[in-house]
Image 1 (cartoon, rainbow, N blue to C red):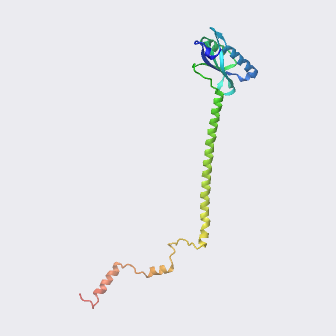
Image 2: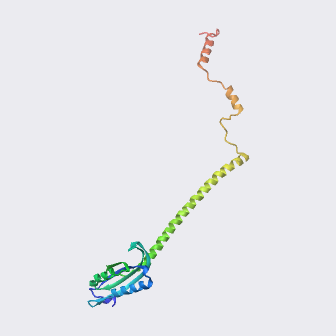
Image 3: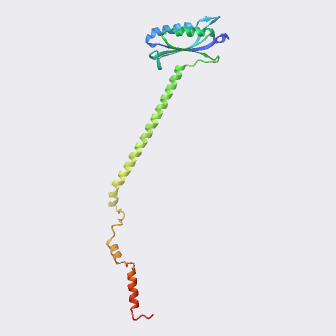
Length: 214
């Protein structure tokens, strides 16, 4: 039965199953064949048809299911009579080796998607982004380290160059506390500011001078 000849009362569905991986690959293949037979059941003149399937294999579970932390994943896209869905759901619930299953109805325009490839691609893109972020952090840390080393080298160089500058004729800045002897002598001979006693004595000597008439 091709998709173009599907009756209006037949719909598209998707089944995802998680099988207990501990039963071994031979038993898993047997369970997958049984699932295919169930999905191909014929009713009301409509034979079920699997138009796409994807085996993901064993993967870690996001959380434990029936005490298992790993499961074998498989996805089936199929066409069947809607009245069979409840019966299929009941059949899968009674299968002890199925850790989990889910059936969802798909829109008529649905096109199969290879989830495994999509997830692997997304995982690769995520890893690449993480690698780029890590490389940027390392690059930034490396640049910061180089700047620190250069700054330290400049400081050490300025200390080491000080004696060389003096030898080359560069004098140190004059120390204000260390004044030359001539400056000290000039400072000693420099006239002091007159005090009030000095002014009074000068006035008295002028008044007592007989040669000065008032």
